[in-house]
Each structure stands twice: as structure tokens, then as C-alpha cells.
Length: 230
Ligand SMILES: Cc1cc2nc3c(=O)[nH]c(=O)nc-3n(C[C@H](O)[C@H](O)[C@H](O)COP(=O)(O)OP(=O)(O)OC[C@H]3O[C@@H](n4cnc5c(N)ncnc54)[C@H](O)[C@@H]3O)c2cc1C
Image (cartoon, rainbow, N blue to C red; front, side, top):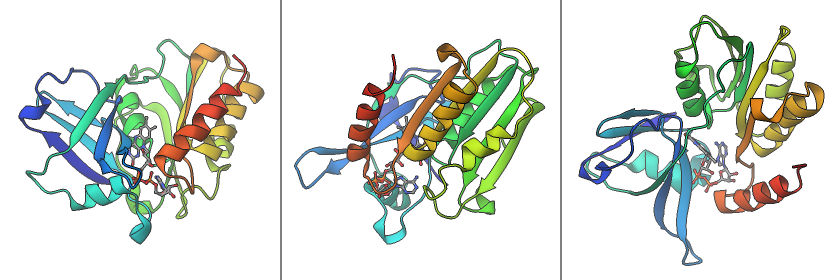
């Protein structure tokens, strides 16, 4: 992960309390003449600053957001849209199932920090390397399991299979997951079809898709959403 802190007078008027929400980063113009836009989570927010954590990927084939993050230097500027509202974990549930890869780690970190101290649950987080594990603020009863997969997108069952190992107590269960598209579909099937969790206790989102840049991912994501039962 690579953190970039945005600040300065341009942030004047940015609404408070947006940690876990997201912004749109405008990264110039693509070959088609359209703006190149990428979506990133607000990991932390202070009165005049927001932190963005970039999951680095792709090496020489890295996308524009990853390249920008690596090259950004103090004093650089970037156009930012948003914010989009945070998607926190719902309150008053007896057990929390949470899963995500490194792109969701900022949102998971922000969400766990807001959970009631008596909350319990299992959190599965897929990272590329042992060195990507970080310390998260979470209630004592919430177990965090780090899963190392050096090839993001290559093991879509990993997160769902890990949550399947949870000893789920009786009561109200909440689930939150964000990950690569195929992993998201496995997690959605677990929550909806296997565990039959009620809709308002579940948030599931695809944050990227292996082989597609963000614009193309958005198209697939929209089609997938439209094909789902209401
Ligand atoms: C609401 C929301 C919040 C998000 N928050 C974050 C965040 O806080 N931090 C974060 O890092 N990402 C976050 N993402 C995901 C991020 O927007 C995508 O990973 C984005 O595609 C990265 O843009 P890029 O320009 O680096 O790569 P792109 O130009 O979009 O893609 C280039 C290539 O890299 C691949 N790729 C894209 N992302 C990854 C990845 N993570 N691992 C491996 N290959 C990848 C693509 O499939 C493509 O082949 C979020 C997405 C959403 C929808």
C-alpha cells in the first residue's frame, strides 16, 4: 500500500465525517478524449487533510492511478470529485462477517474502527505479501485473518471460503464485502444464497475486475447489478 495525503486550501468546504467514503480522482484525459477517473476510499480524514491508500499493482503495466500515486510529490495537485458516502457496518447485529482485498482495506479499517466495542465477528483480508498486513483498530471480539495471495484476482474463492469457516452464533448477522469482481460474486452467493442474510444486513461491492480498467469494470458492474433480483 502507498499512502498519499491530500490537503491544502483546495479542500476548504470538503464535508467532515467521510472516512470510509470515497472520492473520484481525475487523472488527465484518456486517448478517447474523456477524463480518466479512478475511485479511491478516504482512509482517514482530518480537518484539512484526507489520506488515500493505494494498493500498488501491475508493475510496468500499472494503471494511471497507481502511476500517479507513485510519482506524486508534496506540492503536486489533483482534481478530486465527491465525496461518495461511507458504507459503514450496520449497528445492532450479533456477528459481523467482513471480507475484502487490499483495495477494500481502507474501507474495512475505517469501518472496524467505528464498530461498537462489544461487537464480534470474523474479518478476512487478502493481501499480496505478509508485509502488507497492518494493525487495525477493531473490537476485541472481532478476529482478523490475513490471507496472502501474491496474484490479486487469481483466487476468487479465497475470501468466501475463509468466511465459511466462521463459527456463526445464532442471532442477527451482518455482512460487508468489497473485492475483485469474481470474488465479490462468490461472497454475494455466500451471504445471500447460503446464509440467507436479509438484504438490509448485507453490503457487497465489486471494486475492480482483473483484466479491465476501471471504466470497463463499471460497465460489467452495472450489467451485473441489473441482472440481480430486486
Ligand atoms: C468505492 C471504491 C473504493 C475504492 N477504494 C480503493 C482504495 O482505497 N485503494 C485502492 O487501492 N483501490 C480502491 N478501489 C479500487 C480502484 O479504484 C481500482 O483498483 C482501480 O482500477 C485502480 O486504478 P488504476 O488506474 O491503478 O488501474 P486501471 O487502469 O483501472 O487498471 C489497469 C489494470 O490493473 C488491473 N487492476 C486494477 N486494480 C487492481 C488491483 N487492485 N490489483 C491488481 N490489478 C488491478 C486492472 O484489472 C487492469 O488490468 C476502490 C474502488 C471502488 C469502486
